[in-house]
Length: 137
Image 1 (tube, one colour):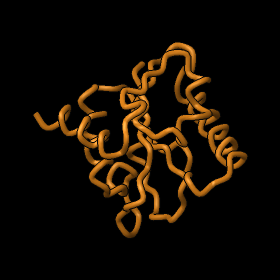
Image 2 (cartoon, rainbow, N blue to C red):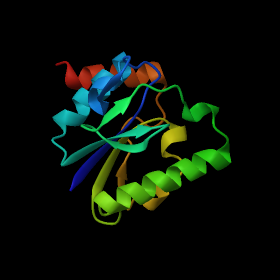
Image 3 (cartoon, rainbow, N blue to C red):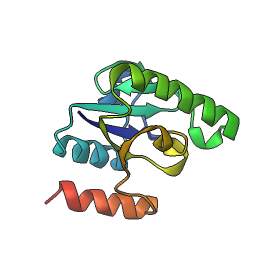
Image 4 (cartoon, rainbow, N blue to C red):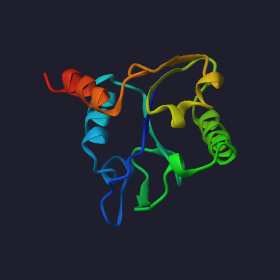
């Protein structure tokens, strides 16, 4: 199974929406479009508040960011994501593609046997350019 994990973004629409529609930043829109182009079996959003979120789950706008969390809290967040992920995927056999920054993936990648981070090492601006090139041809 191919699974794409996309990090949440700061910009969100007011109210309650499906996760794929809640996040309103340019980066997220391009990342989601790119994820869809990969024809994955599942797409999940890595949410600072809700942890692992199915793209179609309805959630409310929130104001929480991983970058403001301590290393201990980030590790606890990742543990919860991994628990949720292990209930819906096979951490050993499935292929995971992570479209997320270092803080979101730091404690996840070592638990995923088949993991690809295609934008690793790129700045946010470089990531946006990379995504635009791949989904707007």
